[in-house]
Image (cartoon, rainbow, N blue to C red; front, side):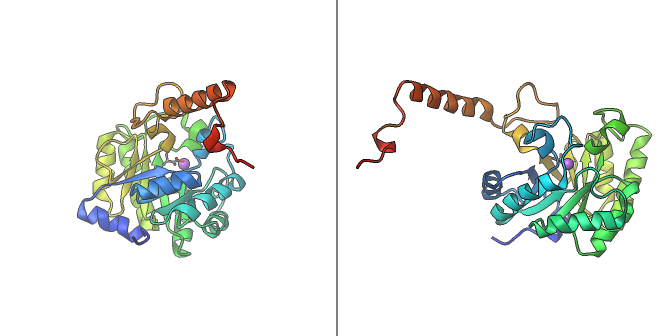
Length: 265
Ligand code: KIV
Ligand code: NA
């Protein structure tokens, strides 16, 4: 089937159809999620804390995300591939954003995503004008962890209007979609109803046009209890651990490799 394009996502909103989105950081996950019919894949800067072992998204850089983007882009046949612009790679100016976005587009991304509201409107405009589809990301923005004072729900009470105003400015600037992270459901609903571009929620309740999850969260690869907004649809940690334990046991007992796994003269 044909490649998913940004206009298809807007059309889905017009039809009232919700859609799923997942992160992907490598070839097999891209292939599997694409085959499963997920229309949008994100090379999130969350690779920082889901692949590279950092404790936040601040340390990850463009040089680390580019090869992951190439791997995903080469193996997603139908899904729209979006690359996250990491912390420090776009904030200084529209030119800064443009030069970084070009690198991701050359690596095979079909769109980019960047965090921030009114402060990055000029960046969003510059990319949209250059024909680079750009997704925004507001609410809790992990790159602003320290400025926001920790992992906190955003857009509660009086702040709801401020967040809606950010969303309207970003739509006006040319964003094709807006991610809403850790936002009360009613705030996300109000934003969703006031925009003609789709909203994509994570920890933003059921009323957004789409839902995004970090794939290792969905798959149950994490150790320890997941955050409240995550639902584990599989227990891959247990499955994988069981497979590895069996392999280790068979090696120790001389069961693996057997005749089927062995070349004869
Ligand atoms: O990096 C990421 O995974 C994200 C999603 C949570 C939207 O930005
Ligand atoms: Na991100």
